[in-house]
Length: 153
Image (cartoon, rainbow, N blue to C red; front, side, top):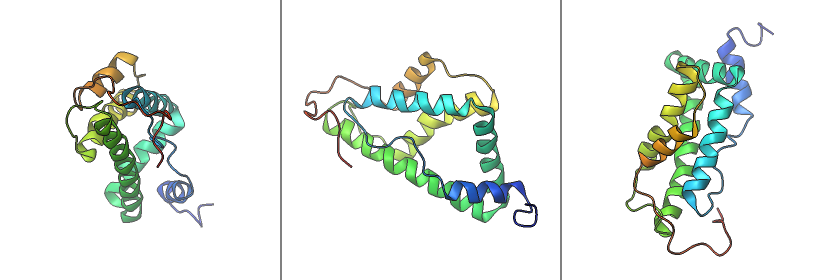
């Protein structure tokens, strides 16, 4: 095993290359409750010791290893793209009153979850998720609900 992966970060990189990110896919109207559910799932995953360790290893490894940094950048791009689709849907349905940059939204939505779970090693209460969602803008009930209940890709 150590001949093929001399450092644990290299094994992590190979494993991560074969796994698709399961969060923030196919946004649904109403976007805020959908986002809250996605954030809850992510927060719950990050409280698992193995997932927390992988997240920490990815952050640390990306500092020194350009291949891990590249994979991190791919994950960030995927998250930003998926959140952009959700935020555009929220704007189209008048759920979110002003546009939000998807990169800023990613930092505002996911950053606090990482801090709470990985650094503080604590769970994320529902109240914090509500505060996190409030941090990206003013939400309201959609004026034009999607008759299908979701937005195709």
